[in-house]
Amino acid sequence: MSNLFYNRLGLAMRAGKVVHGEQAVLDAVRSQEAKLVLLAADASDNTRKKYADKCSHYHIPLVEYGTRDEIGAGIGKESRVAVAVTDSGFARLLTESQGKPAEVERFE
Image (cartoon, rainbow, N blue to C red; front, side, top):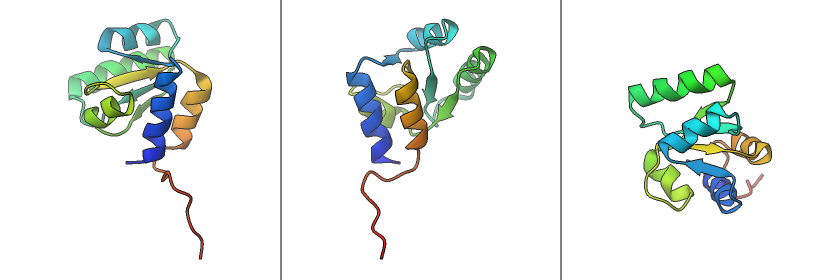
């Protein structure tokens, strides 16, 4: 998984632009405060369906990326199945950084 992605997620958290905790994330989606929901790839089928349905209904992008432990570590907390990013700039940065390495690629 991309270090750049988790670095940016941590930066968003420190900026106060990440909501975590099941109810808080769902509330952010309902209020359309969420600009992006990040869901752990190891989430249960029921959890995946709940967030997918809610995000689809409110037209909030949903990205499955990493594990619950990686997401938790990225925001400096214990494992988290889902987090919501409430800033469109950070949401765009995270979407762009999926799968990209943190280091500058060397061309030879």
